[in-house]
Length: 267
Image 1 (tube, rainbow, N blue to C red):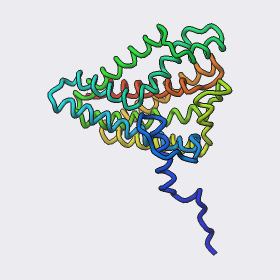
Image 2 (image 1 turned 135 degrees about the vertical axis):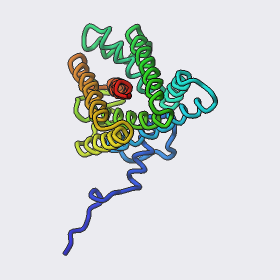
Image 3 (image 1 turned 90 degrees about the vertical axis):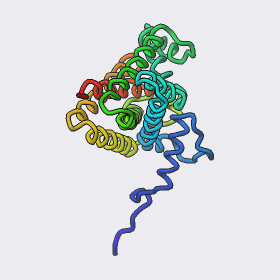
Image 4 (image 1 turned 30 degrees about the horizontal axis):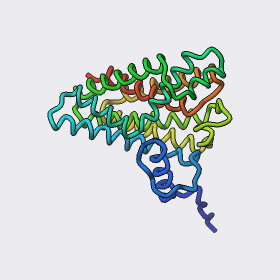
């Protein structure tokens, strides 16, 4: 008698759709409607899919800006502004808070207190200026290689991989606080972590391999993973684990390094 396939073993498309909607609600300004009964820790497996969707919308913004006659530089600025609006500066806020806390605090408690403060300091401003400048600059250089269609591919790939690495962070580093966004979201299981990492890596790898070739794919994936590992190591060293702000910093650091590698390796 054949063994029945359990619900967990089957590909549950309605459950995936629920996870996607829940992840969209967390990572963007777009509401998913009815609240889901599924935990965010389980829904995190859909983060890479949301990253692709965000990248696609950013790439379309770049194409529309060029179509109305804007230069590549202005199109990159418009694209960056559109992405900031779409995500509500969610990850950029984490980057700024992380830079302020780790850069300005002398003790673990002081660093955590600074990261919780809604005001932005010198380290945070510097981190944001550098991040935005690098993002705009890399988009301009990459667009010179293949135009706006290439920007769509690159933003979709970097969006998927960088958001998969957020899940890896939340699943491999302990919470630094007893409360906060990352604690409220929960710790993803090993299965959820593997699904997110595999999905993000495959989507990003396929897109970059298809558009830029094997070595560009390898360098971009490994270097951005290195950026993730560096942020995680610093967070563990300075505050004893991860927070929602650290997750945002991971997304920003890994995505920008990903874009830098593509820009450096295009002909």
